[in-house]
Length: 422
Ligand code: 5AD
Image 1 (cartoon, protein in one colour):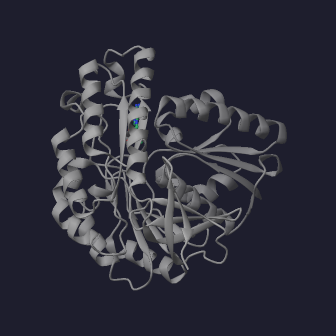
Image 2 (image 1 turned 90 degrees about the vertical axis):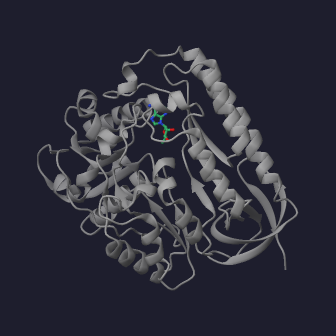
């Protein structure tokens, strides 16, 4: 059978796609053109309204290809789990498979009928193929401990279920032995890791760092409340050279009242404490955060407080999203702000954030830095600094997977430009 697969959304979803591909390739062929396939899979994301709209459009297109071509359509991922009726409305013949049950993808593919597998949970193999021969993304847990009032992902990914330290260690070791240099640990909330099985992220990292080899770990998104529970031990373990000095801690709002309405379990001061602890050790350390602009009942003052917290804490990157009501979430039932206000606030947050990103990148200009080359694209190498900053290097040939020294010559908003020092 020839199978076409398309993937959207977060690192965890992409890791799910990677797993599905591995399972499929054991028996069938993966093709790059949906018209040449007997089966089409779309692994969906539905975190925001705009994501939902682009998924609906794409499912329609793929459904049409499938209908004309007589091929089977499978809708996988968060939208299949959280909005099955929506999917069925646009693709009545499609099979559905939830993120929890993607290990059953072969049965769904090979079944002669339509399969709906969105209830209950299965077991997932953690092994993933190494992308570009160097980077591997390994899920360490599924679901989360939160219940954020705007979030549809909870519905799709459910309660926290952490994988065991032994199992994660086994797959990381294997990936390192196969040549992985960058290990991305992913989960809906990496900081919650282990809290359901009597351990925590620091214990996991301690174990993983026992694995010999030249690799570097990227720790994925961590909610501030769970990060705060382990912050001191976490900062100790960050000293290891094999952990990127990178933290992704979504603030969502710089106003404590809005955070309460969002049902986030921390205050802006908690967020600031984390930033202070991290940056006092690693002044050039990379902080990524997420902001939702225009949440229901957000006053102009609350919006300004968000901007103020960004100005004070200077995140290196801010993912700004305009609030969109999601089905089956509490916030969707609150009084909504007009679209024009949400858009304007979103633009204002982006503007401040971009200025700060550039400012933070500028401080690297003129420095000599060790970087790990992870990709070479059209004569330009893409490398990561120890603090996860992206550095583009011209004319860098045989350097893939190597640590090289570069002089940073220029700063852009989202990356740096460097040249090799001989
Ligand atoms: N509206 C806008 N942004 C949202 N996010 C999650 N849910 C919503 C929503 N309903 C954003 C959050 C989260 C990121 C993955 O997506 O900022 O951190």
